[in-house]
Amino acid sequence: MFRRKRRAAGLALLLVGWAFLRPVASEQLKVPFAPGEKLRYAVRWRLLLAGEAELSVEKDATPGRWKAIARANSSGYISNLYRVEDEYTSIFRNPTFCSTGIRKQINEGERHREVSIQFDLRRRLALLRDGDAAGRTPPRQEQFAIPDCVHDILSALYYVRTQPL
Image (cartoon, rainbow, N blue to C red; front, side):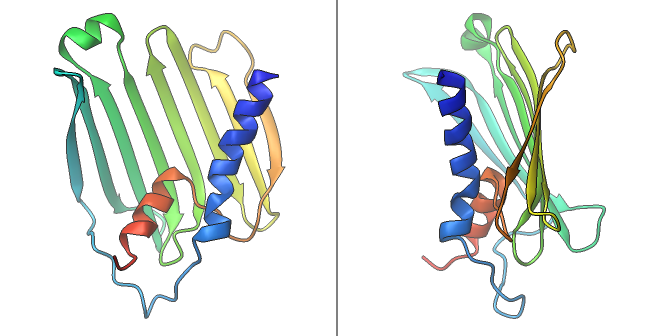
């Protein structure tokens, strides 16, 4: 029951882009970032340095697409308690910021997962694949209906950066 609610909440977050984030014509869009941009953040827990996070964006190998990568790594004393090495990779179209997919490699403590969601815009389907990174269990695969344009968490972040404040 809890997994079903968590999955529904995750899907709702992915589809939030449809309700609030509308694509903009390329003539109107001037992006405030450039290929090769890297944003680095220190992550603190109370007074301790817990790790670092990095956001980077580059042109994808496919013309007309961006590739955004978010990394989070624990460090120092916190890493001894609970090691985190997560990486999220998103591919999205320029200038609409509609996502074609997101891949998550999650390594948190003893939990190691690989999750990918591919957005088949032609068939209007999201194809979810969620599995154990070690391959000990078969991955769970599901399909969901989606609207014309879907934003994942990274494409939505970069889209919001293009909006005037």
